[in-house]
Amino acid sequence: MRKNLSQNSQTEVNMSDPNTLNKAVDQDIQKNDSIKPELNRSDMSDRAVQSQKNITTHTVDSSEKTSSGVESAGSKDKVQTEKPATNQLSEEQPVAKEVKPPKKVIPKKATPRKPRVNRKVSDQWQPVTMLDNVTFKGAMSKTSNKVFSKSVKGRFAKWRIALVLITQILYFGVAWFNWDGRQAVLFDLGTRKFYIFGLILWPQDVFYMALILIMSAYGLFFFTALAGRLFCGYACPQTVYTEVFMWIERFIEGDRPHQIRLQDAPWRSPKGKFNFEKLWKRTAKHSLWVLFSVWSSFTLVGYFSPIRTLLFDYANGLMSTWAWFWLIFYAIMMYMFAGVARESVCKHMCPYARFQSVMIDSDTFIVTYDRVRGEPRGPRSKKVDHVVEGWGDCVDCNICVQVCPTGIDIRDGMQYMCIGCGACIDACDEVMDRVGYQRGLIRYQSENGILLGLSFKQAAKRFLRPRTAVYATLLMILVVGFFTSFFTRNPIQLSVIRDRGAMYRETAEGMIQNVYQIQIINKTEQSHQFEVYVDPADIEESRVIIGNSGSNQVTVNPLNNERIPMVIEVDPELLPQGKLDDVTIKVRSLNDDGAYQEEHDTIFFTP
Image (cartoon, rainbow, N blue to C red):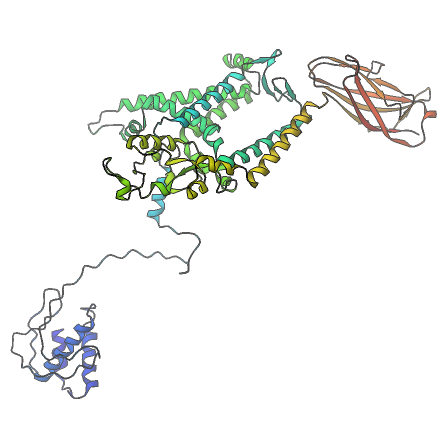
């Protein structure tokens, strides 16, 4: 820079012309911008004064430079000081009367700039946040990390244990019960009959199966509107079997700290010694998981095929291909869902978790963190009065996160991953007891109950509201209608189909015959003798012939059906020409004086 100033000083400059002076200074600054781009306005003004004096005296020496690469304004030669001209660069900068040597400028360390990502995206706000690779990988690793939940004791833990035991005793035990000489609960797909204790459903009863499913759905909606995901937290098969698999895991590997230590332990030590403890614990755990999965799968298949026969076939290798397929398939699914995937099923696969938010409102009881009472959170000494110090009741111990089976923090608010099991409630109550605070920092409460400071009884009064009233009304109508229709149904069913081969035929005696196929279903557990006849109101005199028996009677065994041909023979003199649209065929039981009767309308053709 000093050298540049010297070159500029070789040309005589008119000191009285401000434009010429400013032009010379600007040229000097532009030539040195590549050396010192960070010069501020005051530096530029000082340089203008120094340049003016150098031009006046023509005694500039360029022998000294600063250590930072920027020239020093001092000189070894003596400089004749004269009164400088008025600086025209800035109106705000005062005129310098004396030239002072400028201070050494220490350049700042340049902060590395983040590499720019070329995205064809406008600078306006975008509805989807675009993550870089580092952020995306971090989020995915956090989501995919295995959750090691800590065991907890409390009233809700007892409820979960009780429901797990009840559901599994029923599941594994009912399959072996007998009812009137048959399996109590059997969904026999071969004979197309569903046996549920004394209840027997036929393919014609699919209407009742649909009603059962609809009632289950409305029941789920109703209880979700009242208290959130109670089914998920206590009775869902995924929750129940995950809990069973976690019991096995804790029995083999220990509680959460031991599981994490075993997970992080290498298979070989730095000295090359193999970790046999990790080997036998992992082998024992997965072996028990597989055995339980196979046992549960065998029980499930036993509900669709008689389980005692299935056990004999399994022991002798006589099971059918489909039985083997479903046994292996369900065992693999249980092992993967309850043992490997676990919380990922509830987080990413369960559809109920996605649409539950449309079934709850501000008065629904859910697992809730009392933010008004708990914040600001933080650790503190027991001797300190946290109220006086401005602390909330939450000591930020993170026990509620450690016991959660899905690994979420309930203090972040309601989340679709929360299954409502109440484990965090038990853990928080235990911590509150230790520090001497009131229980219920995390509890079952509604949003309005937290915001308005309502007690449990006060918030429970809001159970009856339009949403729950509609669900309860529809559910009650379905339940009453189902049981009324089911228990008043006729256990005898009759179906009649005309023979499409001929409209009618005439016998040698001159009688007119129509041929039909009839099916009589006996849904009772007793054998019945049935009589088939034509309603006299439609045809005064007629003869009904069942099969080759020559009579109008047929016997149907219990829980069975008979599909047989039937002929109706009538004297043509008693019939009008053309066809009869409404001919009623009736069936009645002869065993109990006609207590069971059924009828079916059909068509009778005449010449």
